[in-house]
Amino acid sequence: MNLIKEIEAEMESKISLDTRENNSFVISLEGFINNDEDTDKFSNIFNDISAKNPTKIILNFKKTQYINSSVLGVMVHFYKLMPQTKMAIFCDNPFIKELFAITAIDKLFEFLDSEEEI
Image (cartoon, rainbow, N blue to C red):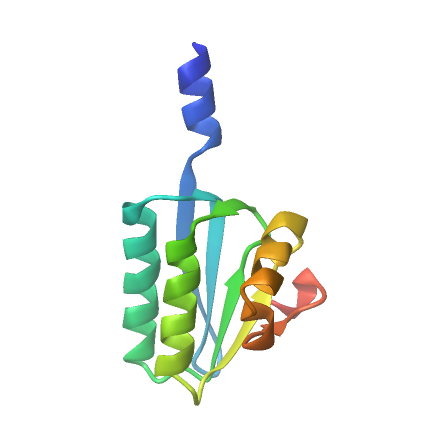
C-alpha cells in the first residue's frame, strides 16, 4: 500500500447512532471528523433525534482523533434547540477536551468520567 492510501485509511471517519432505553441516544464519532460530509451526517443524526423529543443524548468521542469547528457549531445549535434534553460528552482525548474548554462547550454539556457511564 502506498503512503497516500495509508494516510487516507488512518483519516477515515465514522459517525453512528445507538438508541438506548428511556428515549436516550448515543452518537459516537470515530476518526477524523473534518469535512462537510461528516458535519452534515452529524447534523442530520441530531436533527432526526430532535424530532423524537429525547430525554438524553450522549456524545461519545472516545475514538475521535480530530473534529473541525463545524462539529462544535452543530453541538451548540442543537444544545440551544433542545433545552429540555440532558446532553453529555465522553471524551478521553486531551486535544479535544482542551478544544471543548477553549470554546466553553465544557460549560454547556455534562462530562462523563468513565466509559461505563455511556
